[in-house]
Amino acid sequence: LHRQIIKEYGQAIHDLASNVSQKMAESLGIMDNDFKDWPFILRTIKYSFTPDVIGSTGAQLHSDTGFITLLQDDEHVSGLEMMDDFGSFKAVPPIPGAFLCIVGDVGHVSID
Image 1 (spheres, one colour):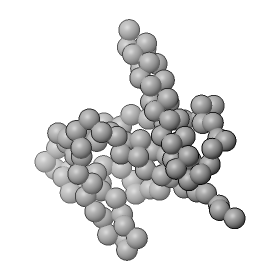
Image 2 (image 1 turned 180 degrees about the vertical axis):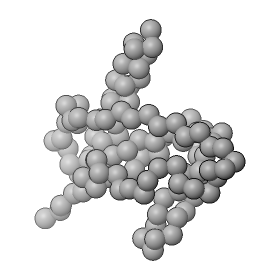
Image 3 (image 1 turned 45 degrees about the horizontal axis):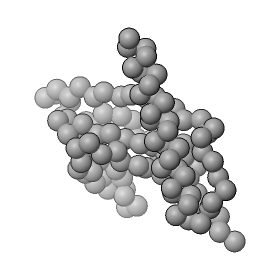
């Protein structure tokens, strides 16, 4: 039962990532890309904050190396921060029921 639930959730996330990618491309005037066959990685990370780890990082500092990252923050835990262009961390407040779409290192368009 759990395997089937994970499989269906993974397919739904893949479809969401494909659709978001398609809409992003279309907004840039790129109409001939199909993202349905692109590989997407489903990764689930659950942070368990305790009083002794508050103020420390929940994940290593990193750059998202893929095309897009869809992140669903937990409004009960929260704590997501992103680094701005000046190296300062800024809090990203969670929006219940929403996904945050982060364009990763692969996401770029060259316009001639």
